Length: 326
Image (cartoon, rainbow, N blue to C red; front, top):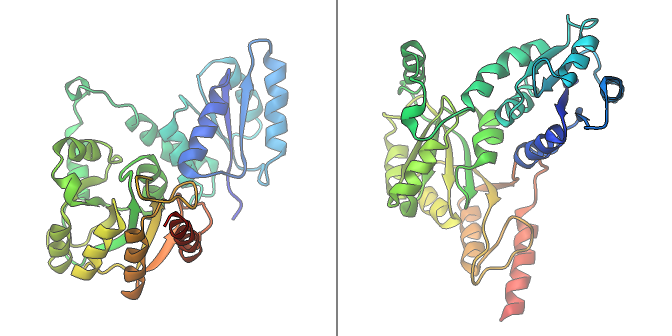
């Protein structure tokens, strides 16, 4: 399947900046170009850049333009090119980061620019939120009822869509890239420490993507849920563990995890860091070995688009570094 090409068009460096932000969260993307209008340039300059960007795509029949401002020069030049291709191409203005991330995720399953454009609009709007919450417009009763229904327990067993070890827990890469890839109905943070921290618990719940309910539970509670999931039956869960030790307790307690995604483990005193995102103590290495003995496999990736790393090789390097410290 040829992916829909995406062009980000803006006044100034905005398009370049949001392209970089999208890559940090969702990973590097093919067939995506940023086109900017510099203060010293005019309409013909950005038109030439747009044509060059389009020509670089594998699929020039399906192009989605995400533009900063309706009626501005970038939009007007996009619109001029669009007129001859409006049966295939699409333009969405008001570019923001949630819109871009949703577009990236949508390209995995949607083959037309029109379909993606219609799909990402609601996410772009939902990305605009206010604190204090009382300033936020009230949700329409119909939409609220639909969201409540989508999160209601259904008969059947809970599906474990992804289990991830990430010391940052629910953050941008999880809330966007992994949520779009897995499509969970629930995100469950499994941590004794976080469950005791009211502030962190509230922040995690507020960080949940639209339409997905977030929970924070102690490890023992997760074990009970796994054994009797009547309150979560029929749901698809994304589990987040702060440490491999919490994941081991959950697995040995009966949470049926066959694979764990290893995303991020922060550095602290007594740990070594064999790569940019993973730091290990001797206890961490021993814990992963115990998980492997329990039949758990490991998927080392920050985001879905990354290639899978080999945890054995990474831990071997970490072990050598720890041995050198002795």
